[in-house]
Image 1 (cartoon, helix red, strand yellow):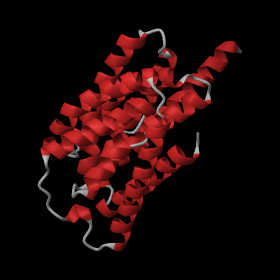
Image 2: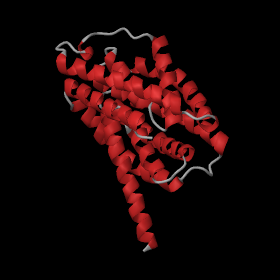
Image 3: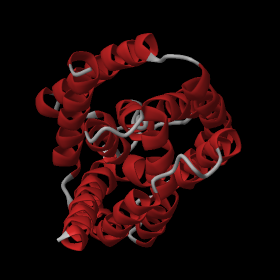
Image 4: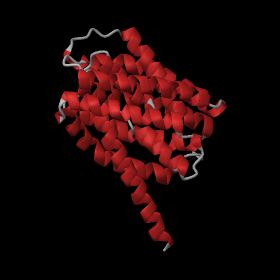
Length: 257
């Protein structure tokens, strides 16, 4: 009976990893935030939950990035600036999670995300000429700032890279599927930096390896399915779905403690 309970627990977490990656790989966000909510609600300490989630994301984000490249969802001139300062922000955020409380930071981020989600929803529902229909010259400097801030929040909160990067890119003119794919590919490198910091500060004893394996198993299975769906969904519908997920996630940050 004890063995059955362990199997059920593994399968349950694997299903969560699969569903979280379907959402994340299709809409560019949701894996870390939803997984973090599950693990913390099960009684796992926030630092250990974040470390375990990011460990699984090393493998899941790699599978997702490769899948998005295969289905043509990546814009390389977005990826490089996001990675360069995203790695730095992730390391500083991991240091901050271990040393300082993050309640005020997360509240501010929740408010920002809510405003972004509502603006996206308005643009894609009520504007005929939406953001994705206009050409855009990207500023590498602004992309670096975006990568730094998103990675910092991701490390502090166990999730946040996608919810911050994806809607920002869409609002500034990126085709939604290109925004999702580019953010997912860059996430691999940011996650690697965050995990290395956690391992250096905490060692490997605070990581729940059984949880990690369950999450990455489900996530890797879901990655190519999500990348395929991302490339096939109509751009306007994809933009609306991203906006709705941003609003839901920001509501969770603001109202669920």
